Length: 227
Ligand SMILES: O=C(O)CCC(=O)C(=O)O
Ligand SMILES: [Fe+2]
Image (cartoon, rainbow, N blue to C red):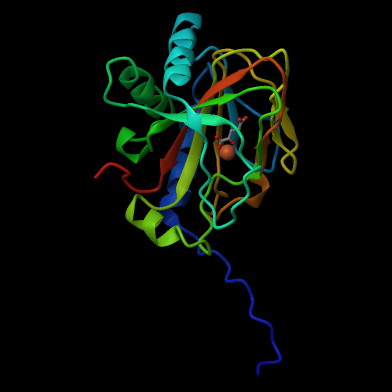
């Protein structure tokens, strides 16, 4: 028996993830419509009014038509962790395609790296508890994720409506709380500048108190998600 307890292996520095961090940040920094959050812990950006009111209304309709209970990618089976409804937003449909590629273009990432955009709906009391968007290499899903484009790098999330009360996106360790505002895109890098996962990006969708919250979320992989 060893006297030493096994240490958690430190995540390897990754030049590919490093480059995504630098390139996307440079593009967003140069965009006059985009503002960087004044926090040192993570690269977080705001792009207000990315979608107009009519487009948000259309997406809300699509979510209402297709929604089903959200699922969780985790070895933990906690029914109360993510209580919203979700649906896939078909990137090949004439309605979704321009939005899907528009997000990729704003970040300067090849759309093939983007997963299927997800629509989400939170009724009063529903939430998504604190989590990281990046994959944990210790979880059983990791080998499958490696085959499907690898680690998640950037997240782009768009609020489709204002919410009367509650439903903020809270990054407790980075120290920001973002209230839903129709058309606002919130963008962040889930990696550190050296390409290792940034633990400080832990965030939650706080419970909606009054109203219904609708968002779309797009996660980008380090490799191609579409083969
Ligand atoms: O609902 C929110 O504000 C956060 C959603 C989220 O974290 C996600 O979809 O990964
Ligand atoms: Fe998330």
